[in-house]
Length: 236
Image (cartoon, one colour):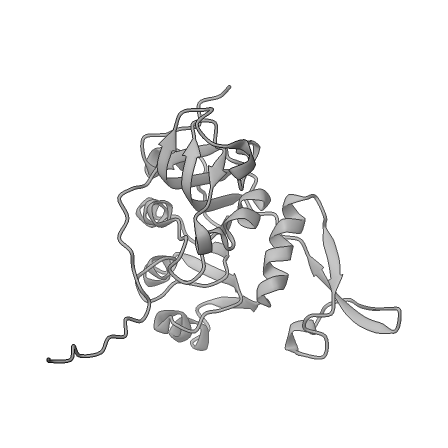
């Protein structure tokens, strides 16, 4: 079995990155983000990147770090409402954006990973999402054609993995990480804990190791919150 565990994110991405590549990234808001891998991509200085990701992070967090350094040329996303730099670059014409409904984006990643080049969906029919896309009618209902996503690289964040890459996600962090992992020609995962092969319950595996090419231990992590809302403590 080929060695999958690498010393750090820089080592895991060595020989993989190039200008103009497409990257599928897991994460939802600040939950389940491959933070160490994003930082290594930033440090590598690659440019003209296309990112397929549910969101673009927030200002200077997640993919927001790469927007700050202007390494991203195009975003394929469904939610971008918390990133002022994203907004500025989009409105100024510096950033190309392909808005994609959330469920459709997940299915486009899953389809790409399953070798399915395209599929028809009702989501987006009659809206701007349908512009320029093939439309067909099935059983009296209109559908539009969406293409599967095949990325040059998938970067994902997991909770626990064994040394062969079998991986478990924790709660909401499961989000887009699993479909993103399958659609990358190369998948690099970072996790909070790596355990010996045989330590994980086979029935608890969310992503089989066959999908994971390279693996790093990313811990420790800070638990970041997008919008912290507190109330003043009541005096007794």
